[in-house]
Length: 263
Length: 318
Ligand SMILES: Nc1ncnc2c1ncn2[C@@H]1O[C@H](COP(=O)(O)OP(=O)(O)OP(=O)(O)O)[C@@H](O)[C@H]1O
Ligand SMILES: [Mg+2]
Image (cartoon, rainbow over all chains, first blue to last red; front, top):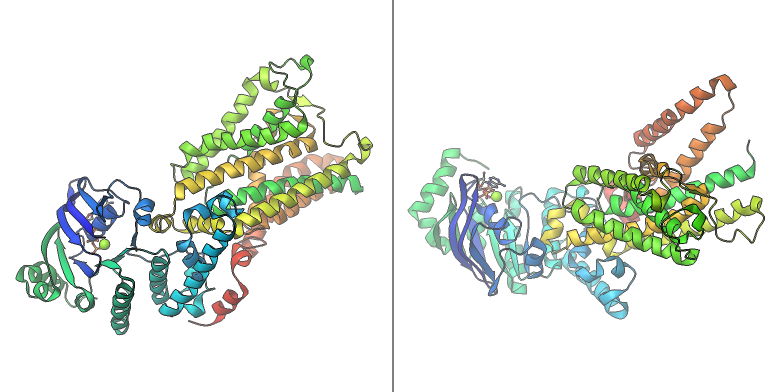
């Protein structure tokens, strides 16, 4: 299952947010997508996940064309994204959020509520039990087990980040799309976060595509890095090569240097 | 003044409004669809029920189907479900505030149709002296107790249905999509389809409750379905606690008993007009006081769904 972008283009008014990007994101590795603010990274995520379909180009996942599909269909195929600001299901508890992510659609119907339809009887009860067991396991793995009955809007920012992963894993993804997972994470916890992402992906054989501004975090976990600048893919390669690329230095690090010692 | 039959009637009305408020809670409280068109769905159910039951050609209507009550009742519920579907398909493309205005407009259109299609609905004349279930079994003056029993049973059924919805995976995903639609989509939730189904379910339930309202009022004219009834149901739900499970029922009992009790205040006849005009003010005051001291209503969604462990954990400082 690999994600293939072929000539993906997205224009907002006069702004070319993504300009003919082609790339292959394999499933068995961690891929990073970097670039200065406004480079088009989130726009590319929105194009892939059906929230804002591209104007041109094709996107396939596992050989299947996915542009034009609605977001829920893309998610069903196993591409599960996060959002740049992790808000979550504000009034749901951690447990409810995780269970909601795992529930198959046929149990989320009025019929399903009364045990009718495809989720009827033993099968439905087994699905529910399995989801509960997985909730416990994943919560324990991420250190959320004591917070299962706490509402999302009462979690700390860090725990809310962990809940993002927990929900994604409950949805049984094939590939994770993470939009700035390290933002607002204390520097001391970055190491733990990168280990966590690496482990989650390796153990489950998940692919991942990660947007972030924290280069030291990405260099720790990425197998391959793509650099986007003003919608154009200007470089791709292993982290060491990217870090040594003078062009990348100019657009990316140069910009950061100009900003001073930003966050 | 305080004879028991009066209070039997008050409680009957409160339970009817309570049932409607619990249904409204499913679509608006959990589903996040702010529906201001309850009156329109209620009118659809009520008129469908009445028209299917017409058995007297002298009433001058175009159709005289003469269906028995037990057949007209479920058909009225099904018809109201179809009306809800027809409203949901275009309206659910709109965001909250626009959805609200659109549903209000649909309700008014339905009321106007009831006025205009006089050969079906007898227009502003309407119908009176309806047959009511079991009314041949008891003395007419004892019928109020029978109706209270029927309505109480219906309220219990509506409570059980809505509670089941609220505590199921379906209800959980409805609340999730209400909180964060984009995230629900990103997790593969078929948000729009789920909402359409929810709106239709609410329509069917409102259509099923509609005949009870007619048994209570004993007459039907389009004016019965003016927007006021929608706002009363909303007020009951907000007082009781939007998003909770029992809130609609509790809020309706508090609201209706309060309103009727205000009507009982004994004043000098020359002040009766003032009392009548002050009534909406007092209802507003009740609403403001509830929202001031219990912003989530008498029963909050948090208390309905949060677990005891969760409430304890919240007290632990971060
Ligand atoms: N919905 C939209 N309408 C109009 N312009 C948009 C829209 N979304 C993004 N843009 C523009 O497209 C460009 C790319 O934005 P995008 O959010 O993809 O950047 P990004 O790389 O994610 O940046 P950041 O690192 O700040 O998150 C920007 O110029 C932005 O202003
Ligand atoms: Mg972005």
